[in-house]
Image (tube, rainbow, N blue to C red; front, top):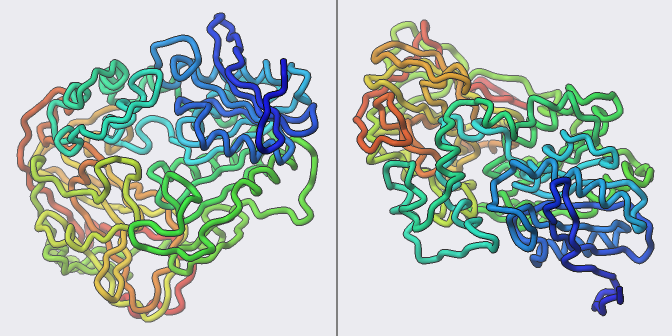
Length: 558
């Protein structure tokens, strides 16, 4: 085959056909370094192997001495098969592709996987197939197992955007759809038709609201003990799939097959959204010029070590993280860092009217409970663009906090900086007049000018208060002890700022609205207004649990 003429001196082959074990052919583009044979890096994507981004990444890796192979997943782009069914064949196809690459004369037989989001989860599914040539993975903004990011039993409503975009072989752009109206549509089962198309996958997934065999087929986080691979884990504090990256890093550090693999895990966390390392500013918050790094160089150095045996002059720390507020990068030996200790900030006073307080002292025995209404047809908004390109950032929530269905608890202004670095949780005692409700918790940095900067948040649905394996009955009036996983952050609350907790029962449209009936959220169209109660007295010590890395003086919290 003739060498195509290029402007950067790299040789490329386009639309190479690769046969899978069932004879379906995938289409791949191959970019070569100046010298072969060389190790190879492969991405398996539903977003177009021939996109500008894929071409840029391929060139960077080729200039770094790697063959880069980009493949369209089965049923998308130029690959055969179909219709496209997310994830169900990608592990086996990816393993076949790794074996094909390793057997080519231009490859040394050493292969790594690369990619983010969908292409991040695919890497884990490929690894679980145990292809012998797979030596390392570079995983960005990786989704967790089902129900981890959306523990309501129903995938986050923003997925309807994704199903629309992948509705066909080519990416779909539908700028004239009224997405705000679509997201308010009930029942959820035909949300796809409200957006003008039909998705069998959307409907099939809604039929599995607990963790069952359907979801276990594409789950990986409970199977890390089967793997023996170095992994570079990359995400941002405002990635809408952030929770998966620290969890995967710690999972592999704890349970990978060999000590070599456990010690080879690395994690990089920046002040980024889902599109990592693309901007130093999100939602008007500027994290400074140091927020952007040469991430590709970090990736290539990681693969040089594990595919080429090139040891770094100075071994990198297992964790490289950006501390917001301080706006600086730090190296740590583990996640959370060893100097972070969990501190309980008790809910006291009344959160109604934004007058509640967070304090280190437990509340008095006679502290009255707080109540708030949840109307599923007037839900508390989650601040985000209707495009769903980025599910929230360091947005200003002061207007949301002015609603009468949001409880607000705040410390006094800090006299010294406080660093919160690690996973954040709310331990709460709640009851409801309904047959189900949600508890949403959000951590906020209150600036001296009043800006309420979102840091992280999470949700628990009462029917799933003991996990996603089974929906439990909710009895009106009974008090339930729940824990809300609010994900992770690394943030310095500066002196003069305040730490705040918001509690509510919706974050729409990030999560579906709890209709309060205890019935099937997928097919119901009617809901009920419920009154929820947050108990925070001596018998029910509701508390915000923060991983505090440094507190110079805690007397201001008492």
